[in-house]
Image 1 (cartoon, helix red, strand yellow):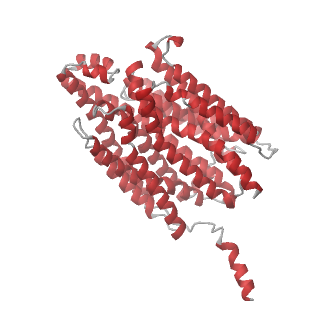
Image 2: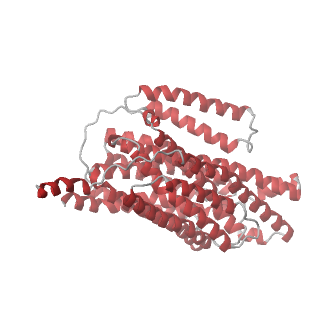
Image 3: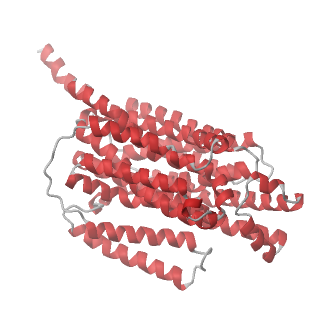
Length: 518
């Protein structure tokens, strides 16, 4: 009882920290059209998200190791401070204090990377602190609370982002983190008491550096290939060489490391390898394609920022409801293989429906399409983590959870980058076919500021061509996402259904009953 009281006192601060990391990305997605309208740089839109996701993904395993070595509480406090500094800088990007809007988009991208570095520490340390405070048999209920808070944050994010954008200023999408983070910081500073462990763990810095370089190179390839540089250009080929070489060196380094950043032993397990690939594809579709929906809804369909947030509710609500249902169904039956298969089919169907959108697709229809996508993702969100954890020994539970999160995050980073490149190419191609290449280049530069006032000032023919090009680019993204979604049920079909470990309540009852019978 004393331990439970201690955890419940600390939990609000931990959940606030988790909300910071989850809520921020959803808020920024809704505010992006206004950000682009003020700062310009439509062709760099994807990098605002990519920088954050990449910073989070690369830093997550490093934060975990540093926490083991120097103490979780101090490192957690540091990660919150870095996140808040990044948030404040993001809010000031392109302001007169930092030189005006001319370099605002570049500043925002850099500051988002700083924010992402802090966010990586938030996510990994919340889970690790719960592990420090709660015995394994009791963690499920607290992880359930965490999952519920994450779902609520995903639902609330678009609404909060839309409200802020419509009634305040897009900069408050970042400034809102400061009071919330300040409360979490103060609460945990006073209330969080962790047991002191003496760990002689050597951080695998070489592995961390090699992994970071390889991931960054691959993301740059997907971002710049066919956009900034030709696929066969020296820049892209050089990045490909860097990615291959660093990955080739990373593998033997991890095999020899006493405490590797990412244990390669886990990948000998077929289920873990398959579910990691499925998690990658889930992140690819969820963060990649969906990132462009608010831009389409606000620009092409004329929705306000608040309404575009509301229009994402069918997807988020469907995800939350189905995730809760699937979790209870798995607990009751112990069966789980069918759910990622159903989820993959639903995800592919949602992507196909969204690929049918055009310049005149009504708002209600888009809402229906994304609800189908949300249903598919709901079947996957719960089961990917569950299967990853059930595929390893109890002592590797944290490593499996971390790796599962990592692959979903890196999938999101790749998805945003690749779909951003496809979007830019298709958008410029659409403008070129309608207005000619020279006019298209000029419009693309001016089209970086597509706020409602600028669109209203355009000639009807120009506005129509611009919106049709943007709608075509958006639908193309979802068309490209279909084969990645189709791969999910194919991979899931090869997952071996291993009985779920642990029935914590029934296990001790059997000997008690037998004693009574004796």
